[in-house]
Image (cartoon, rainbow, N blue to C red; front, side, top):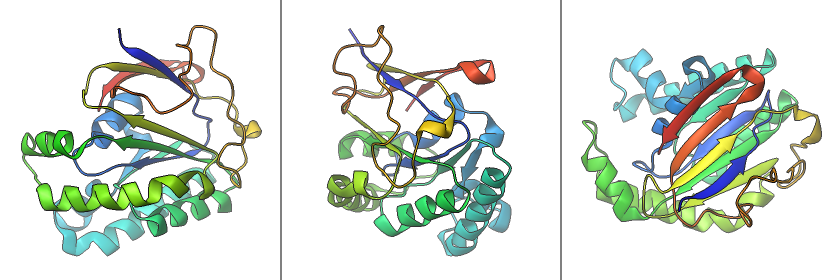
Length: 223
């Protein structure tokens, strides 16, 4: 039976997706959030260069993505930053951005095995290749032990080999209980219906169901 996790996402907040290419970040974002809530660096490359795979436009794409995210947060809007964010400096910039706008930053980490990411990558029209994924996975592994000390209000880590063996529910709440200076501040207990022990990393990832009740919407996602 799939293991259930409950994710509580405050609104407004900055959701920072973290994971190697092929881990399913964009799929999760598309199926769990409204299109307007997602700030994607790939989409910014497409806007600036006409090609989301044009790495030469990455500096401009990230500058644009950061500006878009900060503008949204300044208006009190839930914002999801869709990029690999496997480097600590990339995450620090996003945590600082959220702090400037006085909203919490929430990390959702898709820590899937390299082989799963490579297999997912092979099914895409735009591939990054094994070498890039291996390097990104190594960078993520080095940073994971310190991730909770980087200033995130909450860190959710999903691990596993399957892309359809776990279910999660995310319910936006008031951000008043969160502090951008603490990795665990404001983490609320899971509802009684949650599977016992679901507060830690999920052992089999990554099919998600997002019940965004405060926004009056419901969506599902498979990473």
